[in-house]
Length: 205
Image 1 (tube, helix red, strand yellow):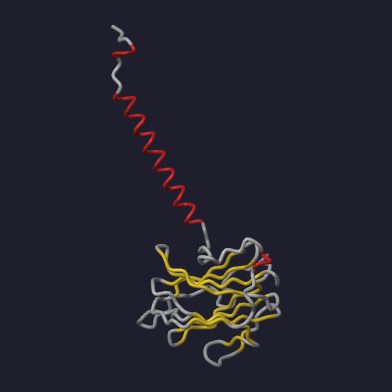
Image 2 (cartoon, helix red, strand yellow; image 1 turned 180 degrees about the vertical axis):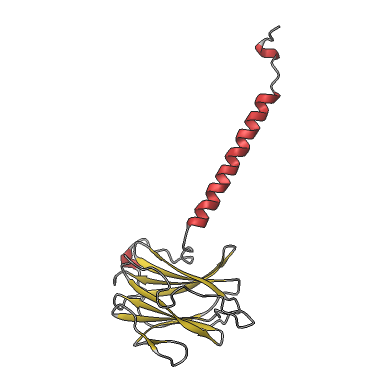
């Protein structure tokens, strides 16, 4: 005996709708997580957005912020933006680290060690006020090639990134730059971690 449409039970259709809605919610959440995971770079600081490359009046003088951090450096990465190249130093936790960043005649290994011959016409010394080793002295940041920490092929500004060493809670990198160009430095702390960022412009405004 067939049932009229008005008498057909609805729970099964309702269950299908619930499953479809749940699947849509899960897929949306996964897409959001994937978008975050694929974003290789942290956002610019509040008020630091640069709608035009001509507005980046960062200057090329030394930049300094003193704040020693016990959070270890776990990774260093780079990325390309429309107006600048970016270097990101990832820390294991908070607090955020301070920095000393300046153009230097030569970047050396360790304290007064051998000079690092960097490609490019200008050498940027990046000192993060955080260690690259644990409390027991074991190295945590161990690049495969300390003289080529990142593949910079095709970058407009960066030419070479070298790891100069970590000593007394501070870690030094040498960044070979195409020529002396304006740069900025800032720290980011949030749910995704703590990062120290160095942006070097592609050109003078």
